[in-house]
Image 1: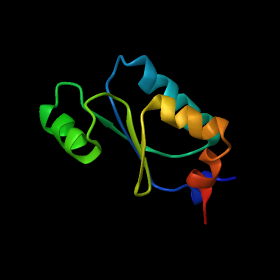
Image 2: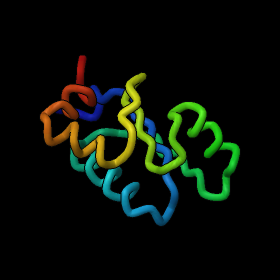
Image 3: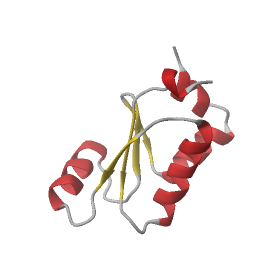
Length: 90
């Protein structure tokens, strides 16, 4: 699998969030490229994230148009064998 084929991934994060670090680590381990949107001290970006996701916690992750949710949901997709399919679907 190659990052060249990766779906567009966006992850809203904060700097010191351990769940954000874990989610980014899993995406890195998968070879997925992602756009990180840091919401630290950015109430405008956090409000956009909340409106888009319906959640106030970070991380909030999208793969393409699919809202994954947070770190737990990302790891659940991986455990179920579904994350690679989402990330690298042609």
